[in-house]
Image (tube, rainbow, N blue to C red; front, side, top):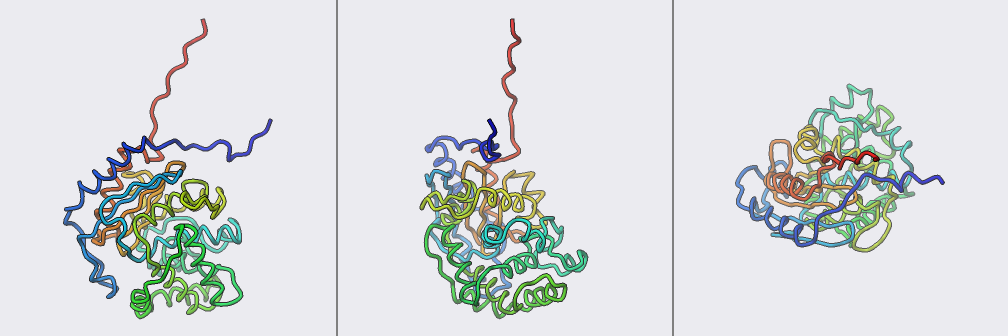
Length: 333
């Protein structure tokens, strides 16, 4: 009898509820006083974020939740939105169509690099850097600007399991600093790699980055990708399992920008960070971690979030590359 490939997947289970809850609280306590990193200053509306806020959340694929610290403090999702818009677009138009427009390889250069486009004949290297994310948002379906924004907003809300809304102050602030993203969009258009008007696409992209979430939301969104596309809170099938697989494979290689290799080596799970201080980390079949702390390292990722996630990955077996020896079979007598 034949079996579907989805019947056989390489995932395991999280430890018991008490073990996970204690680990989440311990990660919060261990790093809450860490004073490393700097709050981003490039975006005025983000520059006054309280550096002491720190939240950790972990959500199992069955919906079990664990939170610690300021896990309900809201902040803008920023670049983390790229992963979920990519999933929604892949669901809508298909794996091959998206791959034909946006690649999946790491650039090895900063997230807003122009050189990565020019060196690849106008083809965005991956959907997690700005050029690739803008190209992905350009593929959002809809007959009008409102339809296209509605697709993004409703889709990201389904991932979060609640209605998300835009932080208008942050959106306005980032819109005033959008010259580089507009330049990337026009460069993509010049290489015939952008669908739609550059200004409108960048406006939609900026709005998606300004959606308000908290650490728990990120954990729910990540757990949706970890659980075959089913939101663990609402039970809604947001995307297909194959789309989760595609999205997580891209996150594994590119989600932490030029530090993606280092992240995989230290943490061993697909992740995405944002400049407001959020990180989502996904362990397929198990669940996801959402963290928030505004002080960033020099690669633009939350210092406390990175340290807490690394500790949780080790303690809870979230590293997708980890293994142990199997019992040896006894020889037949």
